[in-house]
Image 1 (cartoon, rainbow, N blue to C red):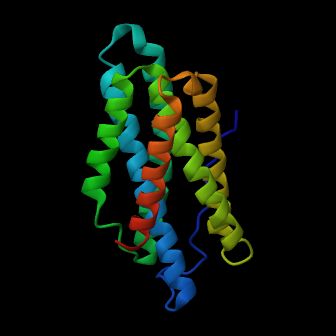
Image 2: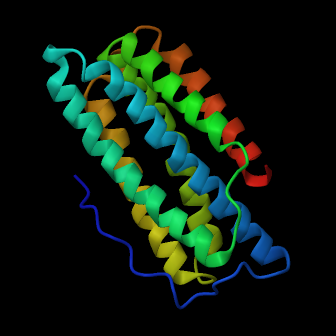
Length: 194
């Protein structure tokens, strides 16, 4: 199990987003990362809304709360980075909140394994997305790269937890997982610009 470590402060790097292509690319990265963590928190809240109301699902609710806490830490970090660099968040935050909560609640209503299949699919897409960013940031923005690397490790931990909890045994796993992955990849493309 990967140990969650608070990322080191990112202050020594540029406060406002730098003009030019590199600054614009980093602004896009941070905007989409913030949107993704915002959506992840909403998904877990939707799942908890179901499982916390079922006494025999207390263990699952606590497990989801633990993963949500990690995503909340990521979200707070990206909130700070957007403010420090004067980058606007996505304009679609209300949509991500509603869609994330709805996806979380819907998969939880399908059962624990479906909720874990949702987590596994989302975290798989996010882990790959962060891995691409790490390659791009390495040597360019070392502190930001370290933060993204730590968050990628946290997402991998959540993915492995979901797999260990039976994600792939969910009814209709392949269809459910494919649909969620497609939705995540589409959301990433939209959030970079909108």
